[in-house]
Length: 270
Ligand code: ADP
Ligand code: MG
Image (cartoon, rainbow, N blue to C red; front, top):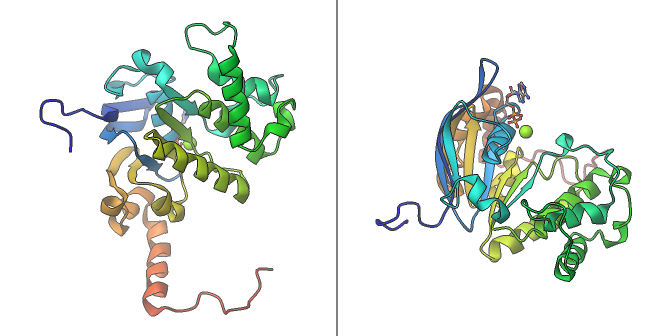
């Protein structure tokens, strides 16, 4: 628990009464929660529930109608250099004429001196990040010439070499192959072991329980925020994901209860 003298001690992210509108339609409504540092946190909710809007608002890309956000107990402008952001893949312009290495090295530019020169250390960190993501062989390739999994690795490499304290990632597993998902998970575990905070939008309910220490569930409103053990339950999932999913998961529970084989052993996938 946080100490009495400073209730936000060790705070990674505070979201206070945050509401965001597109036109007159609310995408987020009175969202309030706080997350501590050093955890792997999943932000879950169905399509259109406001997950990307929340990330963009936290990153200062969207102005809220009301409420505010603090990162590491500070306004965003004070802590930009401590934050890395991996946007949702479809929001990136893949035709931009730039190589993999250049994208990754962008992680080393400081917000206030965008056109400064890279030091030897900067270049070494970028090279190391390429190695960690297993894309050294793609360094000189144009980013448009990559598979979905490779593209995601490039953006993660850029985030890694920023040496941030908090990593925000919007659905890094969308459109990637299983090997990339495994690589990304390995890197996230390493970052968490170093005491970094990972805040990730994720839509796969099944893997969420395994991947995250803490979970925030959203559906325009906040459904829940807490340790995975506390909040990952039928009731919250139902509130966030709605009735259609409930039917599916009830069937899932029945099958588990009866220990009924979903598929006969040896039956093929094809
Ligand atoms: P998620 O990431 O959970 O799928 P989003 O935050 O992208 O959800 O979107 C939340 C809601 O806001 C959706 O209904 C979406 O259609 C709407 N929305 C998102 N971006 C815009 C935009 N630029 N203009 C208008 N509506 C938007
Ligand atoms: Mg989204």
